[in-house]
Image 1 (spheres, rainbow, N blue to C red):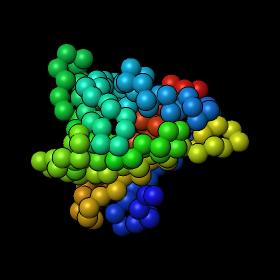
Image 2: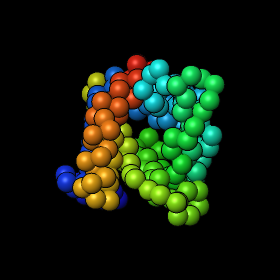
Image 3: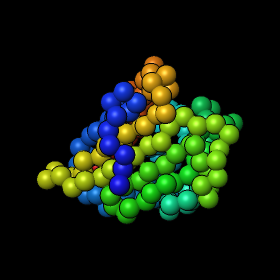
Amino acid sequence: MTASAHPELDLTVSRLIKAPRASVWNAWADPASFEQWWVPAPTLCRVREMDLRAGGSFRTEISDDGLEFGPHITGCFLAVDELERIVYTDALVAGWRPSEASFVTAVITLADHPEGTEYTATAMHRNVTDRDRHEELGFHDGWGTVIRQLADFVE
């Protein structure tokens, strides 16, 4: 079960992806595929750890030049329901150990749609300040771009 929507603390983007749910899921589950769409181009992504199971590590790095990579996400998967839902957070690291700092918990859902897959990504924040900061950092543009890149990758 996912927490109910909290408009003051959550940011959400959704898109119809004209591909089967299995294709969208596989783009998430395969690290080499995931790297192709996870961050807005031309920034590059490298998956360091992706143990796609509850309690599994999720760690990515990013690079603007393809030479030097720096931290992006260091977190933990909280729930993984194949073909349906992925929940991760940066509040925890592998094995549900507390992280040094946290900013977001994300819920990704995939649902069948007559034209493909309804993909929804919700970023949950601990307070209004973090939510507003994420929105100011370009949440809708950034996460929307990533979902478009995912759609382009699987369609």
